[in-house]
Length: 422
Image (cartoon, rainbow, N blue to C red; front, side, top):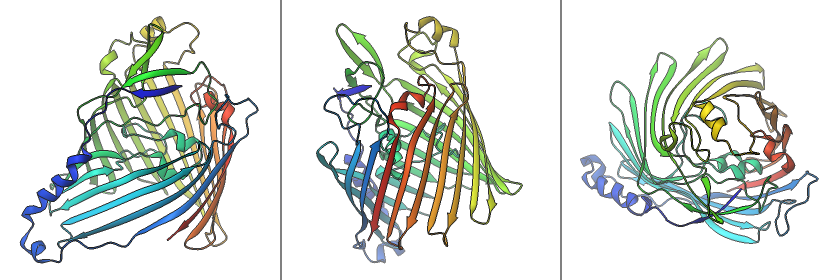
């Protein structure tokens, strides 16, 4: 696993985006100009404690926190408001975090953006979470950054998505809804050796982050009760591609173009979800570079329905088809596990509420059909009051240790979260 040392930083769109939206709003409609100015918002947020303990029997690397990978106390402060008859708005979320597992403290700006709203369009600029697609914890057309360290550590699901420093334009013509996103590159946060036991040799690599803006376009509309969307993205892989240079390692984030579509709507007594995407690996279109992922076609079908008064069930089937698989096999380094040309994954989500819906029992399960591995996330959440809830759960990996999930097989853990909102 990589310990990155970034050698180039992309100029942040966040530095100018907020000012740009406010300048855009200088031409406010007459009614908005006469309305009261921006409101002073109330501050809300929560206090949260989260801990996780590893169940695996393999020894940790010296100096790491993998036996107790999470022991954090977090204060989130959030505010939102607007003014000028709703033409302008703003919102922010900042987390003040004490990480006792690593002995660190930090302030994390989760969101910070301004909005300008008109009848036929809206603009949002600043740090924001963008979510595309219809899949449940499987990502095809959602190419925006993720935090996999938080996910495998059992943090609340909202922490899976990382904010993007972006300018988002939403247009509302009669024929469809159009969303254009211009964003600075931000990588995924991947499991590292400070918190997790990982196979192979530790690598220290210098990573070169891409410059320039990424572009995403989504066009969506309802046809009857069905919601359809088309997606285009000019982006980058968010996990680094590494190659050895002399005695050291260097890497970057290869270019990626993605095009896809999704469709969801009622079928029988449930909801059917379909999604597809093509990944054009721009820097390795012939599949001969083992450091860069080959181009792929990704397909997904899902169905969810209520199976009882307080119980819902959802299932998904997902397939990745690697293009130029023969070239991939020919250039695969000796000793590295080979991926199948077709990779299939099935998921199941089962949720049940009890005790007047104060207790939520949940199971989410991945099964790697082609790789023979799986990942199970059972949890139970109890609401003590409207403001206070607690959750206990586990992250359990089974099956082949060379698969996508099995590679984390020495990191089974149990976790507990307690949150008080104010």
